[in-house]
Amino acid sequence: MTSRPLIVAALTSAALFVFPTAARAAPDAGLPPMPPAPAANAARPAGTADAGTSAPDAGTAAGPLYAWLQATPRTDDNYAWGQYFLAKSLIDLGLTHAGATYLARIARERTNPNVLPRALDALKELTDRPHDEVMIDEQVFGALDLGFLPEETGAYAHYQQGLVDLRVGNERWAGTHFSKLPETSAEASRAKFALLVTRLKQVKDPPDEMVKDFLTLSEDEKLTRESRNEAALAVARLRYERKDWPGALEAYGKVKLPDLDPGRASLYLEEAWTRYKLGDLRASLGILTTLDAPSFRDEFLPDKYLLRALIFRDLCHYLPAKRAAKELTRRYADSLESVRGREDLSQDVRLRRAANAHGGTKRAARFVSLLDLEGERLGRYAGSFGDRLFGHLTRLYDLSHAEAVRVYDTRLAEAVRQEADTLLRAAEQVRLMEYEVGLKLYERVKKGAQVVAAEEEEMLSPAQVAFRFDNEYWNDELKSYRVRIESRCIEETP
Image 1 (cartoon, rainbow, N blue to C red):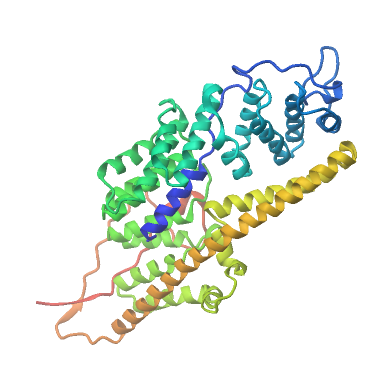
Image 2: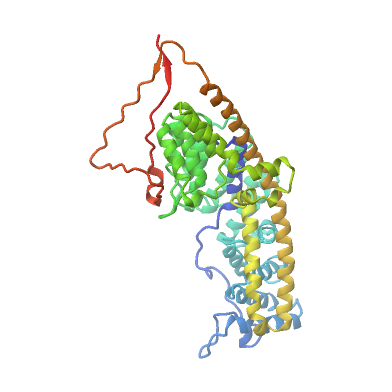
């Protein structure tokens, strides 16, 4: 089962970074009307036009807008609107990072209070997808003067500033920001989750109240399904630590995945450990069979082999237990050799894939991929943009990509070390398991010992059907597998 430091780290990532923005009101609600575009029709925002005229294409609008901005002093009353229209045109063309850069400039410069709420609302929309976390979350929303913002935008800014304070250890300041969130807002619920995770790191024995708070958030409809799932997982892991196996299993059952989703391998593995602790070995082995499905074969789950070996050992199937233990060192032989040889772990395929699967490394990798995609997309507009705008955006994407790769490499280096530590700990436990099984294999049977009577299996009801497993997996059956296996253990007679 995952150790507590890793559990807390996973929850911290979820609390401080993962949550998407809440559902939003209509974009123009409560905002001042836009003035006329600062140039001719070509310089109007995409999707707007005078009555009786056709709306200009975003590609043809971006070039003239950029030229107007270059020729206009920054003190012009319409300069911020020109930046806003250019940003919206670029976003409509699929160049979201370039658009976000202009929106962020409006937010930092704050030269026009009428355009600022629109720019912030547009930036908030972009946080649902991969984005520059430093530029948007920290430099914009984390540094805003909050006194003049509309309620919804202000709530989101308070939430982001509270998260920034939590990351640097200022829980009191974070609480000040969170206390200003409307109690009925989704940001308030996400703030509660972030505070709970922060406090979880500071205590060795979490109180019952903390578990109840996580449980309440797991049923909070203001949160997204992903957010509620994270809260339910927190409940399950805390109950597991307290050896409340039935309670942990109940909490795992609260995790709701999308229809036709094959599931989460880590979630199934944690449930398998819980069922093992409950003594339901056959159900636990059935879940491990699920983890052999093709959709999970690339998952980094070294504990899977350890648990399978433990189950076979407990049922006194010693040779299968030894084979299961050896399977870990066989499957991860290359990675273990890289770790012991002190090689560059970021070049190891399995460790790199595991590091990219979650947390900050996953977000950084997605942002690099987005910049790659938009950099290629930029080439389509070389003719319509003109040399000046095209050259400017090319330099912008080159610089942003270089910085994004630097951030990704930094996070990857730390993440692969953590994955390598997980692998080494599992390999060490497996070696101990092999030793124990070897002793059992050659242990003498004492006089008077007899085979433990096999458990009587309940007859299947008419509504139940059992089939011989033929390595065929179906999504709707993955959590229902059970393995029929008899115990070979021998016990002494009194």
